[in-house]
Amino acid sequence: MITIWINNLVQKTNAMVPDGRQPVPELTTANTGAWKSLPLVIGVFTYAAMMYFVLHQHIMWTLMNTWLGLLSLPFVTIIRYGDTGHRRYGYWAILLALVCCLLPVNTLFFEATVLAIFFVIETFVGKTNSLPFIITAMMSPLFQFVSSVFTFPIRLKLTAWTAAGMQKMGSNVTVQGNMLIEGGKEFTVDPACMGLNMMVTSLVLLVLLIAIYQQKLHRRLAWWQTGILLMLVFIFNLVANVLRIVMLVNFSILPDNIMHEIMGLLCWTAYVLVPAVFITKWMIRRAGRSNQTIMATAATTRWPLSWLIQAILLILMAVAVRQLVQRNESGAIDVVSKPVPGYKQQKIGTDVVKLENDQSLVYIKPIPGFYSADHNPMICWRGSGYQLKQTEEAVIGTQTVYRASLQKERDRLYTAWWYDDGLLRTISQWDWRTDALLHRKRFSLVNITAASKKQLEQEIMAVLADNRFCQLIRSQ
Image 1 (cartoon, one colour):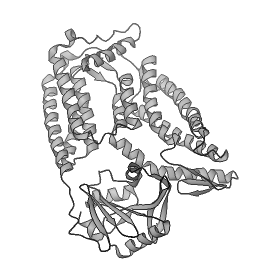
Image 2: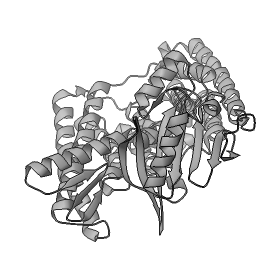
Image 3: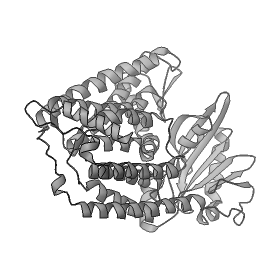
Image 4: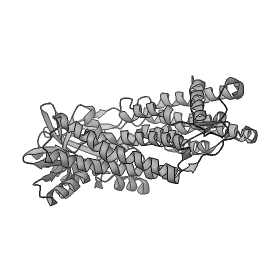
């Protein structure tokens, strides 16, 4: 199956070779030899099995970026058969696998596995282009985490910029967190909006455009030129979202109106898709390097070194698998030894502590290290069927927190969260991760939820006043 897929990719490469240039030999059993085909299949299957064994519960198969990535991989992948023995992916895979042995993180293991698979292909079949690696990076758990957490401040800024621009144009609009209010109507900028969901689609589509125009024009971009295009499309999306919000507010198009989605598609087409097509074609034509005739290099391949790297990588990946499995099976917190007066206390899973009283529901979620993802409420509450509304930064007492309302049918709650090491409290991802890295502190995410905004503020004020969760947080 893998050999057939690679054969199709090589045939596609042959069809794209300009007239007058030597075509790349077709991949067959005769010209690869069993001694190359068998290690290829075994290597790819081994690393794929490792990935499934460790990450089958962490790869989100229902997300758009996962399926778009899988569907686009065959179209952006080109293998130059015969140009074997490249070890660039092998060195990077060893580096990430070694780091993963020391810091067992699912995202590191995902990237190390992908690099290992590319290394196997480049060792036994031929050199691949860089676009497949970009696609797999978009499929990684890190991409989903970054898009869910780090784009939150961007949404707040988008809302503020939009409101400021509309106010200068004479519009009577007010802003509250990620919500615009005009004439009593609320317009929320949240991840469920068509415009922000188009970010993943835009980036994947750009990679497809690059692949199409590189094959059509017989030129290719350097990695930094591809990075510039990705950044431009990211900026185009921000601009399209601002203009989309302005139009929705000006024309009073609410989310239950079909024009809400149509307006998002129109803005995306006009301000993202069309510019991306023209700029991609122009950059490849003007700045792309011309393809050269690809000659087989099997005769100069240093096979002993390649096999040595393969062996070292396989050992490191096996150790990383063991470290990740041990980490997932350990890490339980002794919550009984650190009770908090006035709260019913319960351990959820292996690490989350749930505390409950008549006023509030509290989750304390320890974060293993600066490199780890956190149990962000923007992710966890959505998993329970709630939608976050009116998300904003709020100052309660002297502490800045994130605050939002939770909506599930007719059920409405109010929640707030911050990062806490028992002494320092912050909402900045940069601040707590830097502090955890430099001073080896253990932070936890503190999430407090109440039935009303007043109860929530009272509970937060009480928690801040006596720092009642300090001992529990510092014991983790």
